[in-house]
Image (cartoon, rainbow, N blue to C red; front, side, top):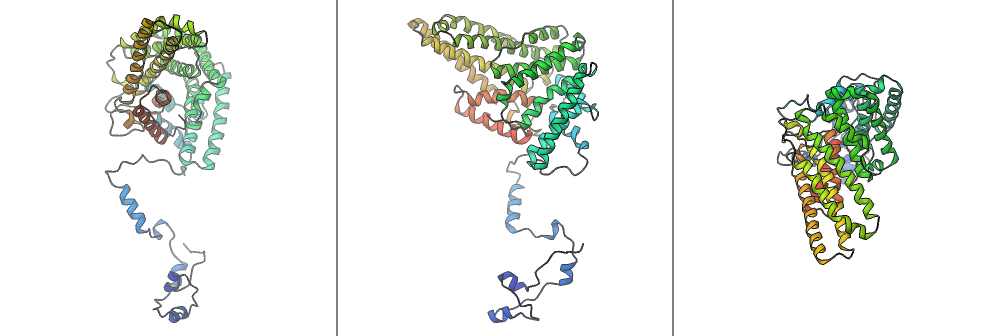
Length: 459
């Protein structure tokens, strides 16, 4: 195509020395006065008509050295990020992008019938204009805004979020749509949007807004009636809400709502053998939050109350831990997910840390020498349990490598699992009980999650 821009007509020597050329032919005056050879001029016709593209520009040798360095197979580099917005119609990218990031399939294993297959099944059948599609659009725009950082992408994220809110609210007002699986999933998926767009997740989870989000999902489950528990996708959606509600209650320092226990009882009547681990994880989390609530009340009271209740509280912790230690070995490896075990471990670490605080308070309350020795032994037990749980989470097969579908690992960690993993990593990072290597490893894994999955949380 014609090159309409202005180009330098100076000779090669003057251009190299960056001095003004008098354009004399065959040799310019500058070169003659300097006593150097004038090597001539560029072809003006060739400069006027040329193809302008990336191949028109020569790369410097330094660029090629960098390129060779990063092509070295011995050097591990992060997975590629989206560096520009898709040039095609954006609507064609929404569902494939979200499906890819929610996918957590095991290599050589089909898990479409497990709890993790519900999200892709519902998303893949959603139509443009539906609540699920609107929230997927908001999530995809949030991911794009994170990976590109452009002003246009951030504006699209805000626009898509507003559209998703209006679409979901319209579905909630409809007496038929509010009972659909897609509506409940759309409300739950706002959690993923917050992970992608807001770095201050703990403040949101502990706020009235986070509590209102949980109450809204609980209301939807109540409106949907008992029929949802007889369907696989219906049960799986209730599990998602259970996990979300209990995790937010843990962060906010609240007890799990009473309806969570009624959901668990209802689910147990229709449970499949492959779901036993999920049942026990939710039951374990429910009892943990209630015992944590009791400990918080004791710690706000008189110090002698801590002394009087320490032994019974420690025994209650032992009883709760038996819920998980008697876990049923599921024949399906798919439900032994990284996220589920990290989720359960987060409640275990919080409980161990809270009981340790209670025992420390009891030791400072004028206890006898025998009680002090007994409490010291219990404290060591709490510290050991916390650190062992943290180690198990960090050393789970595929934890650091599986994030973002790394082919080197047996597992693939998607958005759904990463949401549950985050809580345990944050607990390991901020707790003074953690060992230094555990905090460093948790920070490293969090950095991988943020980079490869686009999450914006701060520890």
